[in-house]
Image (cartoon, rainbow, N blue to C red):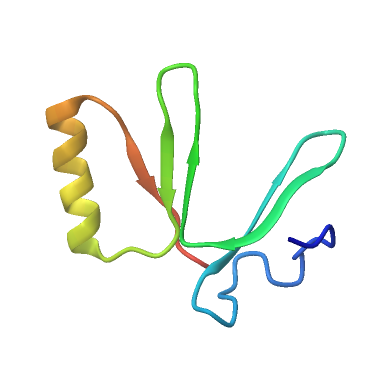
Length: 78
């Protein structure tokens, strides 16, 4: 992984079909990579963001949330 930010690709698909993802703190860029899913730990459980999903997959995750009580959200490339 390069230390160079992917700012010019953020929100766009990389060559391998994945979406450019950057995670930054106020002090530094922590991660800059291509990804198709990101899981972030949170106070009330993990938050998973699928970066390119179909509406059928989204409906499936919503049903899963209702049954198991945790949230999966979806972000699409811009």
